[in-house]
Image (cartoon, rainbow, N blue to C red):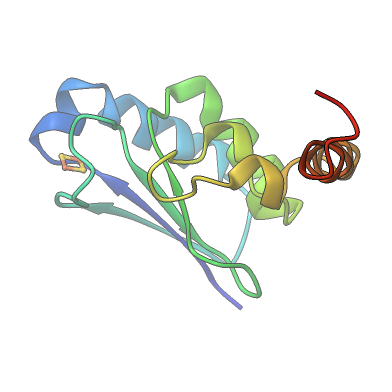
Length: 124
Ligand code: FES
């Protein structure tokens, strides 16, 4: 199944470097099949761009914000090839719980235990 990568090329994102991000994705995706790369108009996240959306099979739609060219290879390898969204680069407004939902299991588990302990006033 196809993965769709959409990169905003509208005014605000252009100023923030989206052409370089598009070029970096083009290079990082070289040789990787079943990925459709699209340059789009405004994605409604102006001011926190460059904005990149990745729609992979069997995963929710992931919004990345403030993407820079060097991050493209990380998103391609970890998310598109490896199936693990890069929570560190995900949009904070679209994915406020990204770290908990997609972070390393160890961190998510530690956070869950700490939250439980705080709720039960075991620790202060
Ligand atoms: S200009 Fe890129 S999200 Fe609006």
